[in-house]
Structures are given as structure tokens and as C-alpha cells.
Length: 154
Image (cartoon, rainbow, N blue to C red; front, side):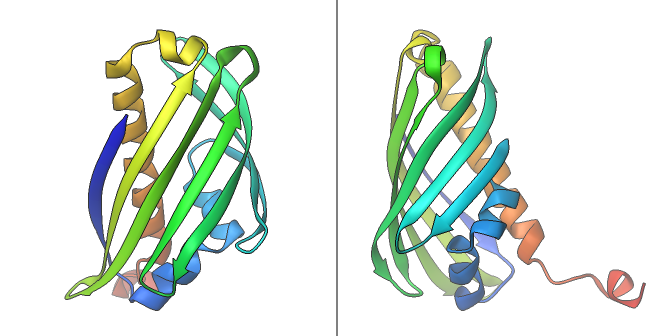
């Protein structure tokens, strides 16, 4: 499965870059994330609980970062195992470009699944992957968005 998209994030490029390398921010942004530990240099270990169609599983996995070109681009590669549910592995290329509204974050993802997950069919898997990416970037946008004037006063 391949997925390509972009998002406008209302924050400067350096702020978005720092957020993508911060395990506390990533834990907040990854849907279903139970735990996430590690560093950009050593990689991250995560536990994510997700339901894909009729299959619910607890995935334990690792994510490594490479090709870091601060604050412009990076490559993420990861693999997670969900026991009887199967596995998921993939890689993403993320680029950050300054824009009028803050930062344009573009990504290209290639992922593979196996086990029971693969039996669900590509339409379900593709739809789930798109939903997960949308939710991740919506959470990132919300986390990095400057407070609205009425929120700042309260």
C-alpha cells in the first residue's frame, strides 16, 4: 500500500521538526498509542492498540529515523507485531517546507501487512491507513496550533 498526502500546519518549520522528534508529542498524536519511549538517535519503541475491521490487536514495534536533514526532511521506518492479528511494517519520507500558513508537511508512505490483517483486503487496509494518517496529523495540528485569542485570555 502506498499513501501520499500533505498538511498545512500552523507552526514554523523548526517547531514542527522538534515535535516530530519528541516522544511525548508523538505519543499524544499516534492514535491508540499506549506507550512510546526512546530517542531520535536510538529509535522509538511503541505499543499501539488498534481495531482494523473485525481485528483488534495490541501491536508492539520499533521505529527508526534516518536521512535526517534538519529541519527539512527525514525518513521513518517501522515494524509492529500484533500476535495472531499479524504484522505491519513500512517506511515514510517526510518533508517540511515553509508556507504562508506555517509549514507544509508532505509525506509518502509505503506499508505492508501480513497475517489476519492481510486477509481483510486492500480496501479496508487502505481506508484504515488513511484514517490513521489523518488522525495523526489532525492531532499534530491541534497540538501545535497557537491558542485562539479567547482561549489565551481564559
